[in-house]
Length: 315
Image 1 (cartoon, rainbow, N blue to C red):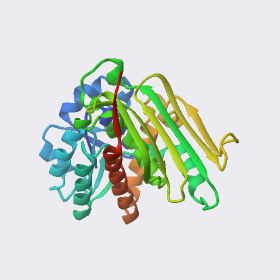
Image 2 (cartoon, one colour):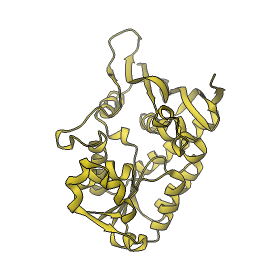
Image 3 (cartoon, rainbow, N blue to C red):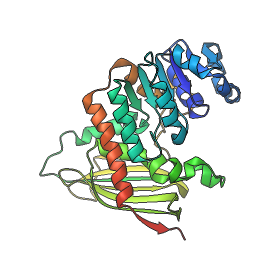
Image 4 (cartoon, rainbow, N blue to C red):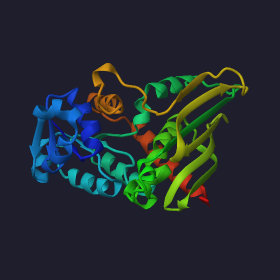
């Protein structure tokens, strides 16, 4: 049985994603009040086993999904690793509040022979599959120019909230909480050479804007821009071959990376179908050496971006 720890995204995201595959799921009793506020989840109420005691909860399951703030995620994960019955784990991004801590956690998971996946949900979207296909047969005599723009106003800026998602030191901010999804995309497409990177914010701990340029092993270029305090909602990808101005090989222009939902997931959070694919991936196959190395390369790339980024104060 799968257990979920987390009363936010764990409830309205991962819970339905799991129950479209499994008959039952375990939740901690302290998440019940949050569950009851989500009317769209009432259809799943009979499939939940509520458990009050964490030790009993961890003893009862064979698969675990952790979806809590990064500073607590590593603490819960370390505790769960003592339970040999837990074979499969999904860890939400960011894995920890810093790249170095994330690298150590992944090495520990490998040492203990755990099957795991990380919630890099962009890698399970239809647009990523299409984009990735364009790079499968890249050639040395061709040049690609990739542009990715993601503009929106984060909930904490919209409502002037002081919470962990706002601050880098707690695992939040434009790179650690939002940009990590696109770092996973860039790493997977092998854009591992950073040309330049700039961050803008109220302080070095409260970063809202990130702009970077990177190259792959053939010199193809990717321009990335994320503004989490924008007045517009925009998610745009443009991929050109050889010359700018021609018809793009691939284009996407929408207001969200997750503007996609299969019919069976209607009326739920629009990320449920993606999380369902992530969960199926976890359960159908053990993590490969290639996948593990991919995850670690994403962590190293994350660290490199943070080390190289120049900071500018927001006016």
